[in-house]
Amino acid sequence: MLDDPRLSFRAKGLLAYLLAHPGLDVSDKKLLSSASLEGMDAIQTALQELEEAGYFREIREAAEDGSVRRLGVISPVSRFPVLAGQQFTAEIESTDAEPTSSKAVRTKAESMSPAQRIVDRLNELRKAAWDWARYTPISAKYAKNVEHINGRLADGYSEDDLLLVLEYLAGVDGGKEESRKYFDCVTPFNTKNFERNVAMARDWDARGRVSSKTRERQHLEQSHDPSIYDQGRRGGL
Image (cartoon, rainbow, N blue to C red; front, top):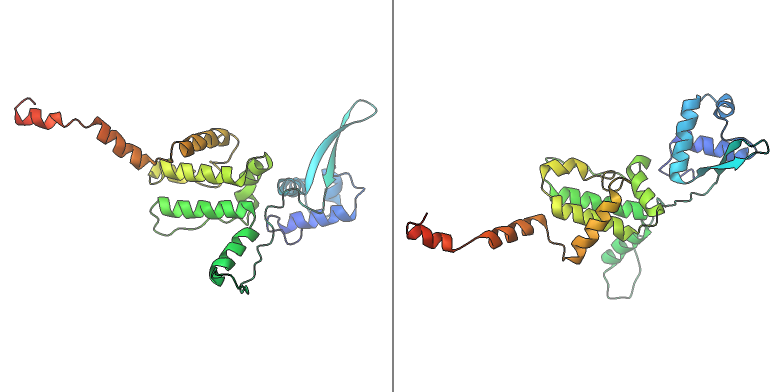
């Protein structure tokens, strides 16, 4: 957990403290604040960060007096370990025909988390689909950049589903200046847009992945009437 790049030092410190004191009432922000120099707002922010990363979840429990208590459950292991260490062997001994460099690249990709691979593909498509004076890649090291990706993976969607949505949006909106700011790590994957996006992407994939430029060309070809030129030569237009 201390090496998890999704967590700030504040969140890591709070998590370590809670694990060392399992009897504490996590829902009592005032009590937690009194045990440190952090205010209640900072404690709440850290807990939200831990929840998004999968170390903390809140449950409700009915008390004997009929009231409802909110209890916090802390775990030393993330429920969403999507940012595992990206380690791979640079030099791989092999007797196979596959080149060592290709094998190293494949091993690196396999060791990456789904979120990292999705963000990497997002960066590739963003850079290729639009003209940039200088392109700055999106980083998967920050929790806010992978929050919605992790959420859709936790909902049961596959990595391929999320990648297909990116391929679809790049195919139909690539190059459109008004679409550039929406092709990011949030808009395609938030709960408001994702179900529609994945449905459209699957239909697009089933139809052969026709790009917007191809559709425009097909439309022009289908709407073109060669008889217009004959009419023009005869003075009909």
